[in-house]
View 1 (cartoon, rainbow, N blue to C red):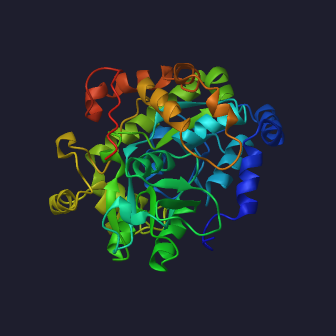
View 2: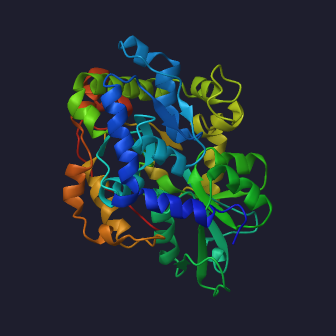
Length: 397
């Protein structure tokens, strides 16, 4: 097993947390915090990836304060396990989570929390070693994913199967030529593992794909947004008790995040700087130029990706990363359907019982974000048609 992969102990801890029994003590801590501090300020938990952009921009630009909300400095956490633990126990109350992870939290752990908005769309890619030319070349090799319950794992497994490859989750043993071993790895560990030839590729959110290219240790084989058009990656997750018990507070939180998304779309270069390690708040350890490659890519870069077929669907005119807050029900439904055929480590029996349409209604509360979008100028302000419906386009080639 790759030495950078998530340890079995860490994985088992996370698996335990996201069960009814394992989540119970954390949820009791949440109840105690809520009772002791019913008017808790905005407490953001985040990982240092571009998925956190709207939350961090909202804090940096003072949108929470402008709405009359007290907001503490965002808390940087180093792993999805830490983020989940901090959220379930009430240490933080606004987080970005991988969209499939919210399914696991609500239905695997029975966590009383809901998706209130999307954080961003696209913003992820499959990056491989320089010697890998096609997906078929990954046969017999190891690829890292950030988490089993991630859009990355879902899309990657679909892509592998479409090319006659079989995803395997076992840690040891020789691989057959048509098998690809998948391991869970922290995003920050992926570029070093690729450089050290411990893995043949990784699929993850930015800016780690851009970083691998900048360091000339890997190349982008395919953007996930060119497979699942305008897919959500991370979403905004909040406690249900805040939605029902503090609706005005919740509305102001969502308003601030939506305004941050609109600002980010208009100011990509400034966003790269404020998120960087040289920014005033040092939100992430990344350089501004690497972040700019993601948020404000050059026309020349797009031409190169078209030539390399990292982008196949030029007619989609997708941005490398974009910001659009509305949680389309069609996406949640399609995600649940695809999760049913996605291999994950641990007990996933609950997924088989999920009804996609029920999950789209129950997991997501779009009442706040609809009002926020209207106040921001409508869906057109985010480059979207003026409707809250769409058809999912997933073309695995």
